[in-house]
Amino acid sequence: MNDTANHIKDITLADQGRDRIEWAEKDMPVLRLIRERFAKEKPLKGQRIAACLHITTETANLLRTLKEGGAEVACCASNPLSTQDDTAAALVKHYGVHTYCIKGEDNDTYYRHIHQALDIKPTLTMDDGADTVNVIHNDRRELIETIIGGTEETTTGVIRLRAMAKQGVLAYPIVAVNDADTKHLFDNRYGTGQSTLDGIMRATNMLFAGKTVVVAGYGWCGRGVAMRAKGLGAHVIVTEIDPTKAIEAVMDGFQVMPMDQAAPCGDIFITLTGNKNVIDGRHYDKLKDGAVLANSGHFNAEIDIPTLDMSSKSRRMAREYVEEFTLRSGKKVYLLADGRLINLAAAEGHPASVMDMSFANQALCSEYMVQNAATLAKDVYTVPQEIDRQVAALKLESMGLAIDTLTPEQVAYLNSYAEGTA
Image: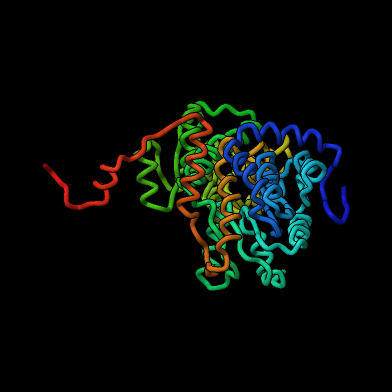
């Protein structure tokens, strides 16, 4: 389907997509509660939101919430391989969201879709990787005048935005949703931990038990992947540049070494650093025959694919999402999903129950930006603690769990310095 309002693969997939969106929604009770309030209060009335996100069933429930809040919403993909085409169709047919994304779109189409989403002249931006912000600042500066603020979903995007803010070029305030405790402690660790291995297993049908898995980066995503790989019976090696995180990995029971040393040891390599060329030319000849390379960082720059290609005498698709490179030595190396986010390219991304908290933060931070943007400087902000705690409290409530509260005596004790050892 290609018209002035949307660009998607196939509108006939819409009913299938709606069923899957509703299936995800049952595990997103926090977002559902927010959507019910938004439907009554319309806190986003009059706003136009351009959302560059992974277009999945979970994301669809966030976009529904923004619409219920009164906003006009246009969305595009934040990764060429992460779109679920049936979800995109449902957003158009059943939920009235301007949608521009097709799974497998080429680079030119990817950026054209971002421009199409921006044609609504947004007042708010919502990013997963900061590509929309980048396009606005470089190519669509005429839009800045009416943009009051934005939100950012992922570590890679926050890194880019903080660099912009540090250099004084960021043109409007943005809330780093990724930095909320109820996002990175859960989404990054448990969501990425499970979905990354899910993507690798779907792509390769490999057994993790007994394999040596090299995890590049021990941030919250790396912690989650290492923990889940260990749980499946793999021997896990961690590579790091941060000495504190390296010590933590050792104390969590993992072997730590530089990538140069890990290269000949690993059966499966997973990059999660937010940086580029974490695996590059100096490593390829050291790899085992049959080594598998996968990435779960946002951009497909973590594995140096051009150098891998130049180091190879041939390449072919061995199966869907698995490309075989035959090195000049004769060894074979397998690259998954063109080095893009393996959990979204070859699987379905994070479970809905995890994204429930992340997208609850997105919705509430959009509301926060509408209420507070006029007083905010052009900088990157952490999620207000009251929003973070509200999301956590709603999640506990939805799980049927209760926690203790402080007594007046305990509150007085914590706010006093007079009382010590009796």
